[in-house]
Length: 524
Image (cartoon, rainbow, N blue to C red; front, side, top):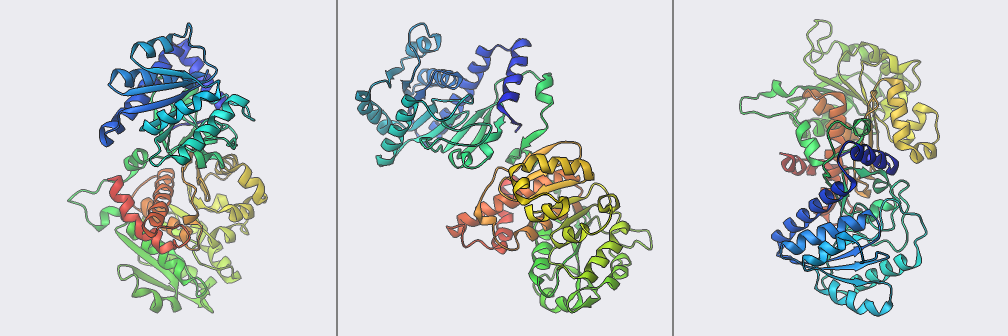
């Protein structure tokens, strides 16, 4: 799903119109797609009645087209018009000809009528305001939204709320939202996702997000110029490697994981288990020697490379043990490992930093650098030139601040821009973690993960993400694809874990890991 600003969307529609796809036809396509989605839900749940809030703009037009289509399909429909004159409006004329009913919202006496329709309706279409919104809301629009919210709150079985293109009251560029905005169960956005929908607080009003095709020509320069997108199930499903009956463990690669210390033993376990859970054929765990006894029984599938240590932290003398490991076979020239992860739980000891500095230039494998590995990198001169490119870097905002020198506030206020700028400057894929995780490629492409949940705000979830990404990289996915797929699966697993437990507060990193198979099953 493409991710656009409102200005970019206007430019796309203007070029489409100039290419022969009229604005009227785009509206027709949008409304029909919206109606077909509602009709499919109706067939699934036995619904047959819908009310639409119809404003004066294009969203109101999309809503009228959808209502007319549904009326012709046998639905009982009602349109509540707001600042939209019924005379000489071809869309209203067509809607009325299909048997639809209308009312005007200008007078409070119509509140009883609206209450009756919402009480009987299975679906409420919010087509009141669109992407050209300017806050604060005008009086009549604010009053109608407040009235609808009150009515919905008092209904025993309120209708499903579907926002047309965006919830009315949301600024589709900045993500600000009017207090009168009605939370949608589903937002059906036209052609592309508007960037404000994936910014808080607007995201809290969006609900599920679906995109309707409006028939844009394939040769639009303005469309192809968009390099930002939103990950979805279909996209990620297409990225995953095929698993055929003839497969064997060698088919799905070997992940070499350098992780852990006596202070962060669990980080190594979470990363290693995640690499296996995502489908890697073999996982080699390189850990400080004292960790082996604690970890081996919890990860019997792994092979182990036990590293020299200083008080339980990887020693600078461990570099030869890694580089000469049979799993890497660098000395013999035969590399069994197909991807390399370094960082989870390493700690901040100087000896470990020296170890990182020694191995980084010598690892010529697809690489993922996470957590303490990133902090150690920041002390190495020209580190980004020494990493085998393209590596995948997985910083949270604090680690991104260490790498860039920017404040966490500046990073959080411009997440996509910062991730994109440094991915290009460093020549590596950047996964900027947090609400709406951003994946940025050196070539300028950016993907957002449409998830913001406190279920992932606990220790160890980043280790799970790193393991998922290195596991996908080991299976042969390109760096950007592995980062996108890993981040999407990780986010959905967080949501699934919270659903299983009934609360986001109790979700542990191990719960997220345990939910990964459910997500993979849905992606198959």
